[in-house]
Length: 207
Picture 1 (cartoon, rainbow, N blue to C red):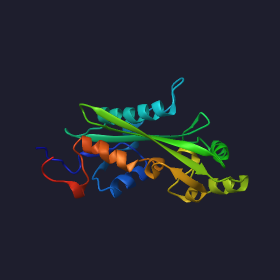
Picture 2: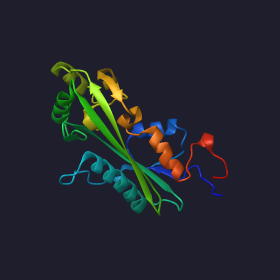
Picture 3: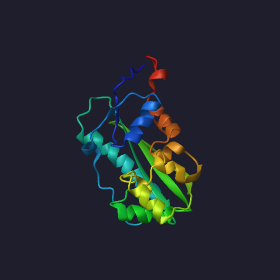
Picture 4: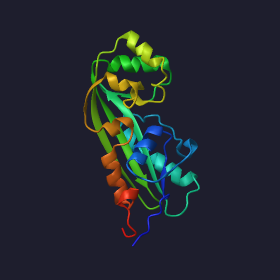
């Protein structure tokens, strides 16, 4: 028997989208401050998008466990998302110019969104990678400029937010909507269940 404490899960992410999705699924958790999982996100030489997001997700979880003052029996959930198009990895744009270039490249094309989620405690770390293909409508320079003026592309992989105004640009999604937003719900629930963590509406005193 194992008692699951409602606040034993910690989200190592500054993304309000991940927090909202995790909450919508019925999980109880605390959000760690951004500096608890701050790492260098620069891709390594010849590193694939899949290897990159998995390394970053696992590294963020490990960083949070080593730097945050977490109680014994805590679990950490971390994630990372990138866009990949024609062999190029698109992370978060550094400025509007880079954001405009990303959106122009994605215009009228199908690209892949690759998200990794990692769950860790003091003994082990498990992770999963999810790819979703997204087809975007053609975007004119005027439409891109108008979208950039909203500020929404800032801090978003590929310079767009599927859960926001950019939803109207997307013609088709093949895969997990949640993974594009930053948290694949099915895979996240499976990972957490492997650690004995369940949403509040599934909990019992015995696991």
